[in-house]
Image 1 (cartoon, rainbow, N blue to C red):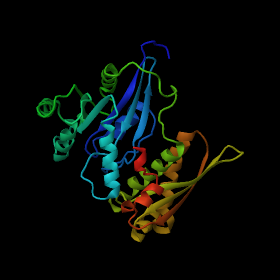
Image 2 (tube, rainbow, N blue to C red):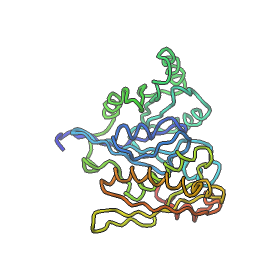
Image 3 (cartoon, helix red, strand yellow):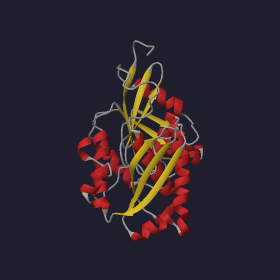
Image 4 (cartoon, rainbow, N blue to C red):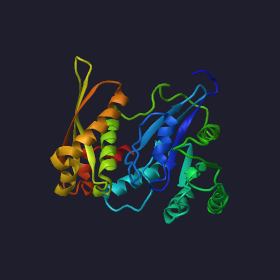
Length: 301
């Protein structure tokens, strides 16, 4: 730490599903810690990304997209998203410039009115619209809520990210450096590895497999030769989903494994041997005991 007036704090990122919250997090942190998919509802747990400079440390909390729950897992995700509003120094309300205002935004803004925390309106994906469309969009949202700041960005291309970080730092209190400068997340390796595997399943199966997928890491072993051996189980709700993930002659599962292994090796900086299994656990998203087994613990939030 090089500054006696060091600033630090916690910032929550909220928004409708699929506005680019995880892409933003990965752009800022410079490392893949939040899984990305073009399907909504990819993020399930609070993923904390840590951004550290000589003068400040921002701890980002990426939440599930706020939406109307349809099952117990959805209830759990909503509880996480709403609780984070109470425990942070700044809230980023992120919207998708291309999609514009939607009913989900109305739902979120009503919840923002119940908090005294400063709220930034961050308009993502500005590279997808004509500049002339931006001003009317800003005016529409400003008429609905007194945002502290409005910052247009492109998380994918990196536009205006540095400006946003500077403005966020200005709202942080003086405080300690919570994490070492080289630490980018508070999640254990086991969690990130399971998320990387789940991301590959979502990417490769596209519309065939909905979000009824969980990945449980059964073991991670570091052996004498320096290689890391990972054994993981992909849980689905139906036999038909199991068949899709395994694929003809095991081709799909092999592809999931190859892609996930490359990301895991980049994360751990070691050679990785990845063993994947697929199991059916019927209706696991509606069973609290199953949710707890798969790492979704309400008492932690």
